[in-house]
Amino acid sequence: MEHVRNSARRDRRAKQEVKQMISRRLFLGFSLAGLAAGCQTTTGDTATSTQTPVTAPTTANASGSVSMSDVRIVDVDVSFVDHITQSGRSFDYPKDGILAEVKKAMLQELTRANPSGGTPVKAEVTVLNVFIANGATGVLLGSSASSITAKTRLFRTDNGALVGRGMDVSGSSGARPTILGAAAIKTPEQEIKLAAADLAKKTKRRIYDQKS
Image (tube, rainbow, N blue to C red):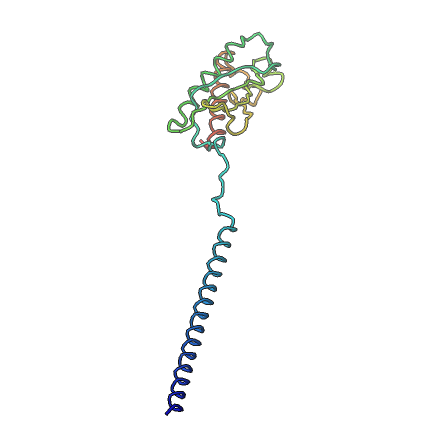
């Protein structure tokens, strides 16, 4: 009988040891799984923290870039270059008269050329050369057309920035190519008016790239 009881005790101890072994294995398995999960999370956080943030590309400041189609000329200033050249007639024609005629023609043509333009600018016109034809030179030289050459530059009225590039343009009173054409030469006042009007029209075409 004692032998039977001892055998039963040994069976119970064996079962307890088996249960303890299974419990330890389960605990170890859960611990390893948790450790692996923790390593994955840490790795992910580290990668995120070391990434360089993506920023949107910067756009260059284009405040100074203006399309000519957006230019609206609101004022015109006209002056002579320091050393003005006049050919064909002694320079006894009043400079103020030439400047006034050029400014008048420029204002009429340029300020109404693009009234819907969103960028107001001022045109600065520098007269470089004046040729006033007369009958004597027309007969002698066979050149009977008066002309005015000027450089025009555009400046924004809000910040004074130059818009585009300066342009040299020549206006003419009209070709009279033959010697007999000298007879068609008008008075100096009329010649200046014709040349100034042609100068203004050609300057407008250069600014806005118009064909007519």
